Structure formats: C-alpha cells, structure tokens
Amino acid sequence: MKYYKWIADGLPIYGMGAYDLSGKWQYVEGPLSACENGFHVCRADQVHYWIGTELWEVEISDETINCGNKICCRGIRFVRRLAWDKDKMIRYAWCCAFATADTRAAVYAHAAAAAFTFTAAVYAHAAAIWARNADQRAWIEAGLGEELED
Image 1 (tube, rainbow, N blue to C red):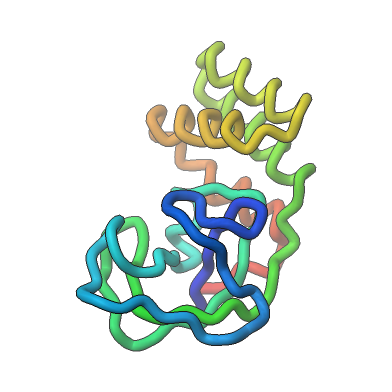
Image 2: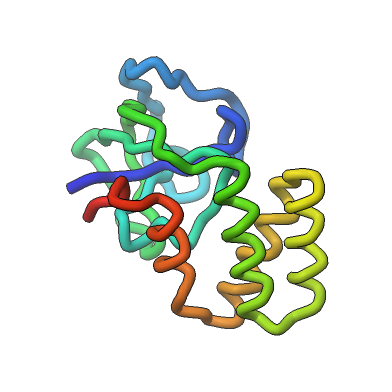
C-alpha cells in the first residue's frame, strides 16, 4: 500500500519543526497519539481530506494508529514529490469554491489565485468539505494524473 504526506513549503501543515526530505528515516519518541505525537499520513482514498503546497509519497513504519481520515505513524521516509504545484492547487481551490456555492469560499479561492496564499486555499478546501462535495478526490486525482495509487 502507498502512503502520502501533504506539507506546506517543506514544513508541517499543523505542528512545528521541519522535515528531512532527503529520504532518511525520521522517528518520533513517546506514545503515538493522533494530532499530538506522530507523523500523519494518508492513503490515496484519504488524500482529498487534506491540502498543502507539496504532496509526497512516503514510506511508514509498522507502528500506526488509524485515525479515520489519516494515519498516525512512528516513522516516516519521504520517497518522492508528486506533481502538485501552485497552478494545480489554485485550480483545486477554485473547484472547491465553486462547488460550495458559497461566496466566502470564492473569495478565498480568488485570494489563493492572486497570491498563492496557502491559507486561502485551505479555506476553500474546507468549505467544500463542509458542503460534503464528493468531487474533491476526482479533482485532486485529475491534477495528479496517474501518480496517485491505492
């Protein structure tokens, strides 16, 4: 099974610190706890719940916790960066905004398009999730082509 990790300009989307993207294994110490201690990754069917400026294929250690829309693991190794870029993120933000019929989301998408504002794209993405739009996975998959595998 393949796993994926969203990051924002080389940094965690949530949390602190930086990742070693060189392919070396990284580990956390202490008890695994979702949203508190561990690396958070996703399977292909969970990628659309999250967004970032970079999407990486990763390998993970055996010790994991299934958290519903993500997986928390003890160790991670960045394998390769997928073809997710500024233009794809902006198009995705626009798709999310228009799917919600929410003018606030459209404003955030416009901000993302104008300034590549990661936060704006996150708000557009969240608006589409709140609207329970099932097309998000298709939009991300269309942007990534055949790179995203189950």
